[in-house]
Length: 231
Image 1: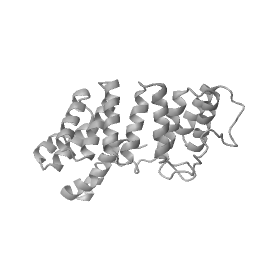
Image 2: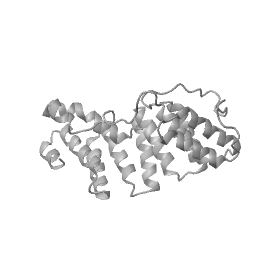
Image 3: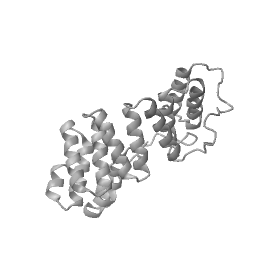
Image 4: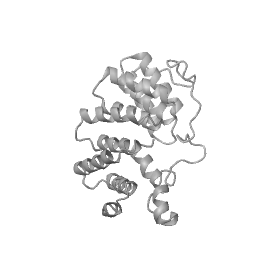
């Protein structure tokens, strides 16, 4: 799954290519496509499989329904969406099965959100993250997942709000602060983006993502001297 920061560091290629020349930039910024571990026959999140979502509590016919423990079903779902070859359909079935056993499993809802977001079923992802947060309001990973879902839909105001709520749960979260800065950059609020990336660097001085994105932001406001300092 591409995080907001990855989107901007990848999208910045076009901007930098205009100033530096495409050949020199391409080698400097590895995009997620270039290092993809996916091979033919694997379930690739960049090519979402068809998922039936109109019956969220219906297990897959091929699911091992001998499982009676919700926690075990969640663990199996996590494995399906984390370990190659990825199988989001099966992961969703395991999470739904867990919820059939115990409807108050916030980790199952979180897993559903992650799987739906990875396969670009954004409405379902938003609902799943929301249900996870309803059960556990301080679940920062669900709050971040919700923000990432909005970001991927280019709903930057909502994404920013979610990331800010995540930061409120964990004020020293580098991931949340970086996502906040990326959201400001997406909104073309360059002053806040600069401040946000600087704050990220305060939290993690050796953050390559923050330094890179701060440099890109300086280029966007034609401050090349400041951009060079981030290189």
